[in-house]
Length: 274
Image 1 (cartoon, rainbow, N blue to C red):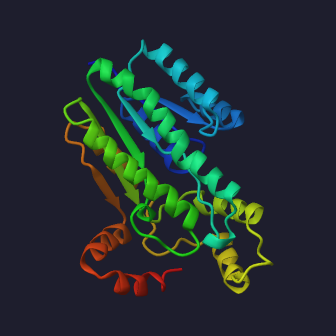
Image 2: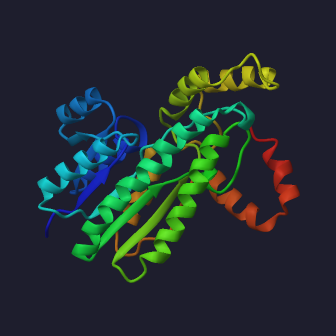
């Protein structure tokens, strides 16, 4: 049987890296992309087919996809849109530029790549679009406004795309992880320090606690390993792909709470979440 090809974004570390290695071991032809050339070099040294792809750069997106399609003879079985980061900070401390940067990576670049892949999948009559979303794609939590907004938007766009692709042979799935062991907090810490004024804000005291939490190496409650996401990804690559995969206990819990509770009650619970 022809080897199925999968393009993955954000493979330098964490979920993308783990899934790229695991899919290759499971017999898929994996194209593991990363933003930095040094990460691409490392991935190649580890035996992965890797190319540079910066979701903030349209030329980079097109060049990477063109190269992948050249390698596959113009076909692609699946796209796993995993590349993203989290920008912490209260909503009123987010500048327009910082919010725009969050959307460039987490939504606009993902959307652009997806739209370039779709004609390929339409032509071949099949394909899988898999979006790595988050529990914060349907539940808003404090001091995560930029990330919340980008993932809410990704979910809305993906739901619409799924409706529009009915009977096309192309499926659209959302993976919604809760806390997963990765470099997410480390990267969020760097963005917090770089982009949030911690002194001239009503949230000075709260930010001290947030900074300590981001610097902590301890897992938050209910944290799972990257394998939990991989199990969802593997299922989404099969013929019976689901529209949504809720990963970790908090994701499942809050999915039901949002449907059962009033906004007032849910807000009371969410205000207690750090």
